[in-house]
Image (cartoon, rainbow, N blue to C red; front, side, top):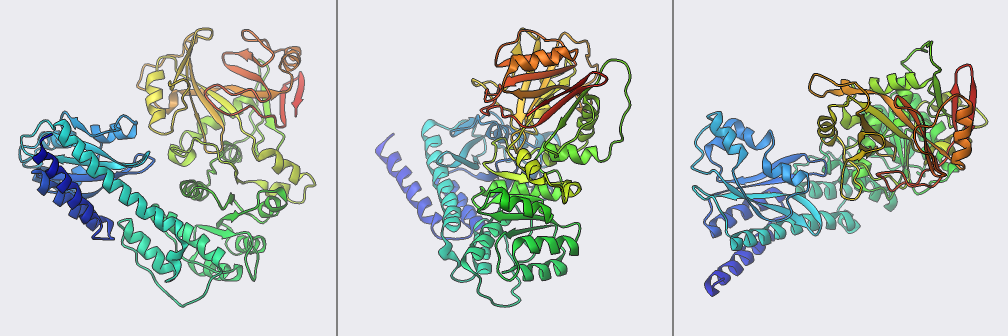
Length: 575
């Protein structure tokens, strides 16, 4: 780099840094920076995508777009996908790169949306703060098909400045309760403006809130502003005010502290449920012991979260409780089970599986298959939270416990459910594994093992992929190539055929296998003292030793009450 070029780069970075500090409004700041960057580099067009952890994007700023990209109120910038966004989503975009062609411009030419100003290529640069990826900065000019290494390095430095400042502003607002000295609503309005949102507040009066409550509402409000599909419609400083606000506003979900003045959280929840039977209640608390959980469940609470829950996890919990698919396969199965009648089967023995913990009662493996198939009509984003593969330290949601009201063993039942998780596998049509993988990867984060997101078993002649739901249930999709169940149509959810595996955790694998064999089941392959498959390709118990690490997971197998029964043969109870 020549001395003159080096001086120009330093001047550009200095100018951008000064520009970044001239505004507290994110949109205005980005518009100004983008214009200044193009002016200093001789480029003519640029745009910025912010991309969230679920891969959703928004074009938050643009400058000098050609008419082709301005078509129908910038529809090409709001809809569809492109190579740079796809690379960002799958983790392949770490540094500034040249993009061969711009797909959005190619589409514009194909559909004759307008003049492209002879722009065909652009450079794309990830916006990041440390290891956190925030979005993309794209820049272009007419006839420019390549960006030099020095140009890309400069763009990378500018993008890092932008990303660091955006993340720092959000972080400062999150960590600085002093931002509340001018009042909660003012603080939320300022935070929203910093996120590029227009926040309208309605103040009906002035009040002084206890510090813990104010900071709790501050945290909830921040997350609502980070997730504009949610709206904070009211606030209350105690349980009695919560009742009054709920009666007036009819909210979908209420988040509240377990310990509040005037009326505590348990009594408030009980009265809220009587007042508005359809309301969903989540409590935020510092207590995870059963003395606090059980009364909350009895009062009708649907979610029980620790106050130190990550903001994105709080948003997931709100959505799950609102959708009534509680982030737990147990809760979903229970809901589906309520709508299924008892089935009658004949012929070969039918396996029966049930959780003695009380959250799920499934009358037969065949019925379990029917329930799983029934769930496929549910939008996967409602059933399984995208990006929610990491198991929460403590998160429990509840449904269907009313039937246990007054039961002496309700505490034991809840204790058994908390922390338990299942391993389930479902059979795919044998010739559609790759299509199924693409379908699943678009909906959930696939688990990885030794850098791979799928596995082939030579012993079973099968391909498998794995993922986890938000509370840690380990779910597997498997294609057995020894089974002739090929499909002659493109993959669809109908190619998810049946539940074929259920994990069975025990202290003594070989003894459990012996008991299953006495009930008429057979080993399916080799058995060891830590792992043994029992059954056949259409229905297997994966018997594993307690604390053995599940394949494609970091979780250790844990025991909880489980019952296996074979019609007209007998039952085997574990735990």
